Image 1 (cartoon, rainbow, N blue to C red):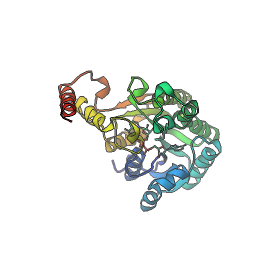
Image 2: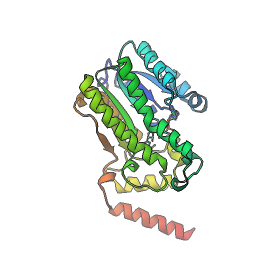
Image 3: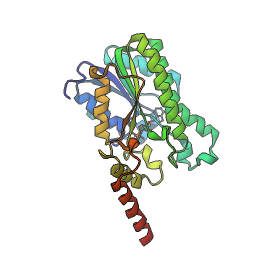
Length: 277
Ligand SMILES: NC(=O)c1ccc[n+]([C@@H]2O[C@H](COP(=O)([O-])OP(=O)(O)OC[C@H]3O[C@@H](n4cnc5c(N)ncnc54)[C@H](O)[C@@H]3O)[C@@H](O)[C@H]2O)c1
């Protein structure tokens, strides 16, 4: 693991605090030999702990709102200065839904919030890649990964407008993968990750029960943030040069499992607990 990303330079977007998936990936990339620049919004810097985490680990931090083209242009040009050259990899680990935050259901969506959800959680990847393309900022055979979730293709009650954003995100990754691959060999993939306890994830109803359900249903168990970090290192490395335009299921087999005895037993236990309350 130590040298898989030796001499590689990357940007990690969306680390808010030590629970964030992006933070686990940033640390693992650094341990694998990469030079890493972090980025998040000004508000995230105020509310989260990323500034001190970045300082402690010697990672430069650039503020950018990924819905704002000027911010993205500044981020991409400044990152190349700080990294000393073109960018080898980017992690897009960014999402937000005001409908979810404000408990507006899918059937009662506020459309201003809905458009913001799509902009922050999906179209931001398009804006980012278009800016990289314009600035010719991605090194040949570079790699871009965005984080997605199974609700992009299955109904999960309560995942709300984020499900639509994830479907769009996967489509944007596929299309840019087609364009960038032919341009200079850059790969663009999404990873569909198991549920992990983070700030963004707290908004979902029944979240803790769902973690246990995902753990019990998946033949390999639920994939953790550290497991995800390993997969990102593999995708950013030169070992995966022919993987592009894919949504990689990183869920211990959950998405291919209809029923497991352990999963059913878990549901029975929950039911019994509820009956005793
Ligand atoms: N935690 C999970 O269970 C899980 C599972 C599958 C996929 N994901 C995805 O992983 C990604 C990271 O989420 P997380 O769970 O680590 O939560 P998180 O809250 O730590 O990360 C979300 C990040 O998005 C950033 N963000 C919001 N608006 C932004 C904007 N306008 N510009 C730039 N950044 C902005 C936030 O500041 C935050 O750092 C998200 O795309 C999420 O949907 C999470």
